[in-house]
Length: 253
Image (cartoon, rainbow, N blue to C red; front, side):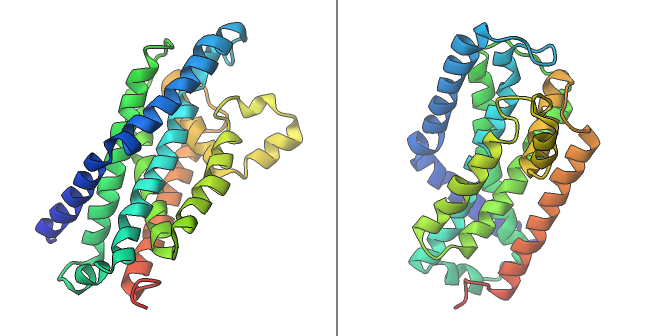
């Protein structure tokens, strides 16, 4: 393992993030805080509890997961797309750096940024809503698995995209709607039976349900299924991203 190469890629990406801190950190924290103010403090205080949890506290895992998904994808996709765009990707591909080391550098940096963002959002939520974390180890595990999985997914999008507009298509038109419909603001048990069945086809449901269970011990689906779905998605993305780098898909042409 070439740790110097991994370290160089990792810190290059972290420095790029530091230069755009207002856009990459302050903006999502402020946006999510507005959700806490509106839905947590203002509207949440007028609504009934869900599964014994106040509405303001109930939506925290969903909102945190929403920010984590979008930022993981954005960080990783822009990270690998810019070297493609300005041609420096060929310097990386011609260097004695293995596929695994490239993935560790880019995905590790993107996941780190998302986890830091998630921790800041979680601390910010405490200012507006009182919440508890019943299973802190599992909470961290879901946070890390989701950040890594969707950073890998963002890496795939960055390799696939051949224009800036394509970097935004999947997060805006697919991931964000799936997160909103995946139980960020409600329990899927509140839906009619037919829509409950349809909603189970949404993979984000398992992420939010498992993450919410780590906070309050309540879940829409079995926690083991949530862990399995998250791990399966991570392995699938890892295999696809590795194949893209090995074959030079949309990189070497």
